[in-house]
Image (tube, rainbow, N blue to C red; front, side, top):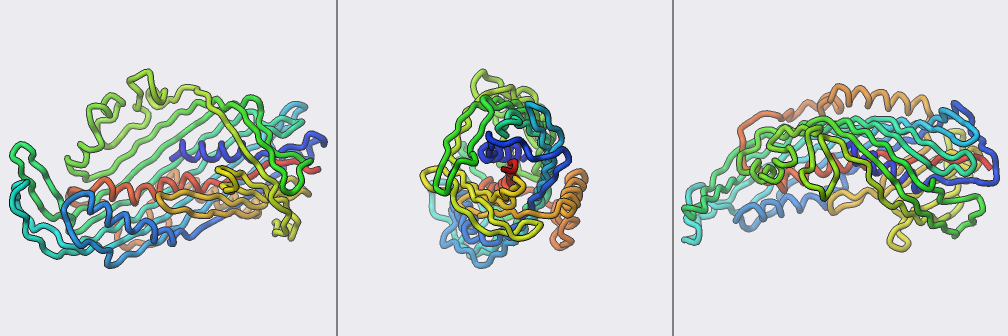
Length: 439
């Protein structure tokens, strides 16, 4: 999760940093501004729910499957405070305190015709089918907090380097009732069908650090742009990362563990849960250059296409202003990220990001917020991450605590459906503030 946050933040921040080569910097040491946002993501369930039925179809021979009932509640938040830390003749240093949070509660009942429990000969007569309800529920909380230090050129406000440290965690469970478990015996050409209940606790935490240098320092917009103008910019980013922590999913049966952990993953230092993130290493010379949690410095291209979209009236913390709206575009005219800039003080007062979540997309927006209020929100999430607070502690909802029970054959697809939501949300809620000077 930490790597995802750093990568997303670094890419968007570099892509959105504007410049003004004609004027002296207007920022002063100690200047601060903030962004905040939150989103109800309940609507994505319409897209994700059918994947549950698909996961059952892929895991065995049930028929006439239908989602008879379901419920999904989700919320994500993001907070960021920017502070100018130092100004010299050649550089400006800006500190960004960031925090993001996600809570998800999901449940569903799937009805269908399932094979009756028993032992069947593969290729023999068809088993007897019985109508059953299978229930699935999950509650997850995930959060990240950290600090990014960005170094800009004083004359153009282009980004030269960044250092980031982010702590993240995810905690919760996935539980199933009356789940069909199929155990295949290839030697005897038999399949054993049984129905079980399970409750699998999920516990993931990580600490990620990154150092990145951009060459040449990337600059993507200027004050000479008019509405409709665009600027293409490119650079090379060289970055190194370290990661530590652990990832654990409890109560998984041997059939699922064997699916995740093979002789190949063992060579990477992963032989089972919990996974020691600091012990991961690539045994080959190809692929990700990671050795015991350290990703060696590697270089890659940065390329942006930034468009000056329009002027629009929006609210800053001090009142209504006419802001400039810029968009980072990919694939023609698709605005994957936009930001609103207050030309009076060089602060970003709003952002919009398209967050991919499996087959769904969420439009996440931030707005200018009071620094004190945002700092309080960040402090709260800092405590949440440090304490690895549970869903019940964060939301006050104590129903369905989960976290214990017998093992079962929960399909890996089912775990992915719930898990991918939380992981992607936490990475994506960390929005972007654009640093700029006054004209």
